[in-house]
Each structure stands twice: as structure tokens, then as C-alpha cells.
Image (tube, rainbow, N blue to C red; front, side, top):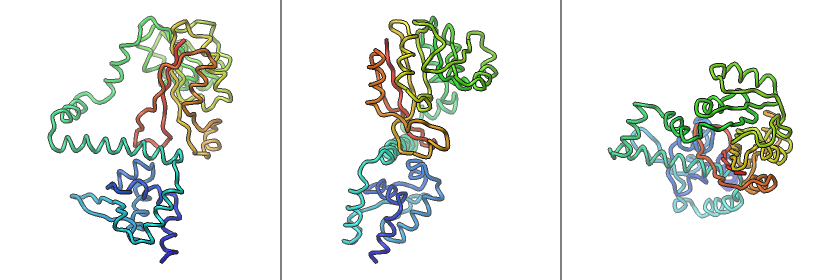
Length: 307
């Protein structure tokens, strides 16, 4: 019996599942979104845990809800789980599980409000049905100054520039890869206020004080020296200029180094604040972005710095 119990705890995915189910009911789909695992994988682990009497299951309509209730565990299982829970600690993976779970539970609350006919949530759904979701973001761009010259650093194929171009005076799109700039030119051909420049983020093809704002989206984890990139960006900003950085929070997905060529496994807040200080920029705001539970990657942060 002891070996059977230990076998159930010998898989990290099952430990992550048990941790989220500790005195909390979740469905297969909710677990899959919180853990970034396929539903089939979660279902397989849940069956093993249920058969081993680690979790209890109940039905609500057509859904099955699972929960680890410590009071229902026998003494041996209870001791094993308490030891396993302690040994798990608080790794980056578990922190990301918690962050995504918060979004799953928030979505559940909104669904519940809709189910019970609460006016506010009904309006959210009605607004989505009538207008979609993108209009809110696009309308908020109207707050950006129409006189700004903005640099899109590491522009890639031009996704961010495409959003911003209708709202600013000029965009300077910079990338070190000619193929990326060619793709961006094709994508952004309809705009007449975008200039393309080939160059490295640590030696930008921009003169001092040339731009009002800069954005660096999901690029710095590919840069050998992010500190140097932020310092050179600061050089190109006007006084009062703003730098927005969006990238991955620190994570432990080591395979990204080999599969996607990442030089850094995300960045923590201390590192980001260090960049600002070294570049002589004031750190205006650092915050983690709400994770999209349909996404498969690590969590993201947005950092705003001002010269």
C-alpha cells in the first residue's frame, strides 16, 4: 500500500494537480488551463489519483469536479501529502500555476454572475457579442500623443507597430534581422509614417534624443546584454520620454534555450529595476500581466521607465 501511495506522488504533474485541488474544487478544463496541460493528460492523472483515493469527485450538471479533502485521507496518505507539499516549496512553475488559477477562478466568477443574471456581467457579454474585445484596446490608444515619434525596437514582423501607427506621428521600426524587416515592410505597407532601420538593440541606429517613446516587446530574452540595450535606448529618448518593456517573468523552462534560442529564462523585477537604474531612467511601473489561460508560455510583465 505504501509503494502504491508513493507511486501516485512520483509525478510532478500529479503533485501540481493535488496542490491546486487542496481544499478546492476544480473541473478538468479548469485544471488544464491553470497547468497548461492537455485535458487528456489531466484526465489521465485525475483517474489515477481518484482510483488511489487521493481525491474525491462529484458531479454538477454535466461537469465533474475534483477536490483533495485532507480530512478524507487516511493517516498514512495525509502524512505523505503534507511532506510532499512541504518539499514542493514555491518554485517559479508553482507561482505560474497560482497566477493562471487566479484567472481561471475569476472567469468562473464572471460566468456565475452571468448564469444568475446579474446586470453588470450581462452587459459585458452583450458588449462582447455586439463589438468584440479589441475595440477597448484600440480606443485606449487614443490617449497616446499624436505628436510622438516612437521606436519599435526588435520590431519583428510589425505587430506592435501596426497597432500604434494610426495614433502617432511616426514610428521607427528597428530589427537586426533583414528578413524580419522585409516581413514588417510587407505587413505595414499601408502606412506612410513608418521608417525601417537595420540595427542591433545595443547599438541602435538612432541619434541622441530622437524619439519620444520606445517599446521592446518580447525581445530582451534574445539579447546577450539586456542592460546595454536599455542603456542605449535611454540615450535615444528625449527628456520625459518613455520606454515600455514587455517580456517573460523569470521561469524554469530550460528547454527554451535549445528549442527557441532564448539566452535568458525571463527576468525578475529586481533585474528590470536594475536596468532602469543603470540607464538613468526612473522606474514608473512594473506589473505582471494577467495570464491568458489559453496560452502555453510563461507569465509576462510590463515595465514602464521614464527619462
